[in-house]
Amino acid sequence: MRHIEIPLLRESAAFAARLIEAASRFGDAKYQFHRRVNWSHRYDETFYERESDFFRSAPDAYLAGNQHTAPQLVDVFVQKLRPKQVVTVLMKVAAHWIFHVLGSFSGRPSRMSGVHIYRKCYVDDIELVFDPEEIGVVRAVYPFPISVRRQFRYLRFLREKGYRFKLAGYHYSPRDLVSFLARRDVRSLQQLESRAQVRHAYQVVALGIKTIQLSDEFDIGSLDFARTLARFPVRVINSAHGVGKYFPVHAYQEFHVVTERQAQYYHAVRPCCYTLRTLNDKAAKAGAELRQGNMSGSHGQTINFVFLSQVFDGVGEVIASNEAGAVARLNAEFAGLPEVRLLYRPHPNKHQSLAPEGFELLLHLEEVNGHSGTVFASFFSTCQIDPSFKGCKVLLRGELIYPAIAFDNSETIVDLDGLVDMITRFLKPQQTNMPLGLDGL
Image 1 (tube, helix red, strand yellow):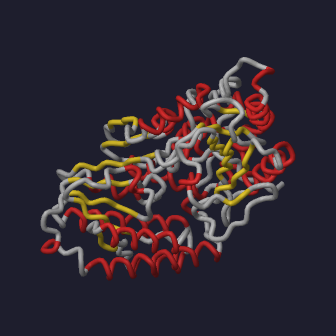
Image 2 (tube, one colour):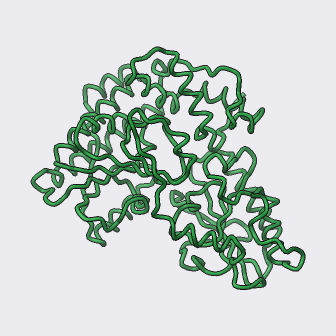
Image 3 (cartoon, one colour):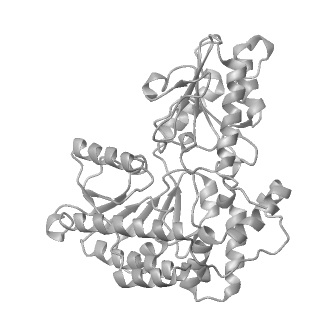
């Protein structure tokens, strides 16, 4: 039977704990054991298929850690890669070689005067997780193949703002690349990646950097990069770029998380200080005030309902089908009502988007942001903690989508019926005295 990708399952603390337990049975040396966990997380689909079956049979029990069947893991390193995966690796290596060469002209120690912070970047989301105005920062921009346009926009933004930046990339060894092409297995790919990351860590340290700022928990090579940096007197800070959780094992000295769920999920190979990121306090306060019934100055005003899409090229069918069902239901319930304006915000990695039936396309947040009556809804979007989104925020639970895996208990989480009921009750306040958004908590 073909298995579908269940959103957030790989990000659950239960999944990570069972993966680590299964990987420990191979008897690897410490470093290789840590690598095995992360590389199995990405490439061992057999483990995922078993775990997804357990989850679908009893989701609540699984997430509570009450799955009594022992986890099983194959040796991921002997697994062969498909031709498409090999091509993807070649494209990644080529992109990094190009960025590495171009960046070498501006990244020499003699040209880094006054710089003591190395900020590893890809696109604009890095500006949300570290102080944009911090002094002594050089932004090192690495390839971002998911959306080349988005990266070009970010580079243009850096030039317009006058921020100091350079291109950067990993110097993959030609010899390791030849070995990978000859074997085409996960072991040779891991060696190609790990050795490039270790080499790159030495190159960054050679710049005289004192602090390295990352948002790299999604990078499978980040474990080797951070672990190598730990040998030197440099401060390594990783700040989660969203609510997503990626490879379970890391080597960061400091990890700024945006939810308590993230701290519960990750496993550090060295002592790590986890702190909840505080840059979003203002937005969180505004959202809390609106959620307590101040969404509109008075009942009867227009609701600006913004559906935040999480669909883009390559996204799983579960998300796409849940979104299609949600927008169709909202269209059926509220389209044409003068009191409700249905808006659709495309995912930033979606190149071209059309609004669903009954919705208007929202391209500029300023139209509704911070206005009375603005509601943002998504399945598990980072907008829930993003300071640029100001309004009432609601998370939507769907078929095989459990936002509670990613978000803490303080967030408003409802199913589609509950969301429709919330909006309906706001439009007809005389039928209930309950404030908007407080049921279902």
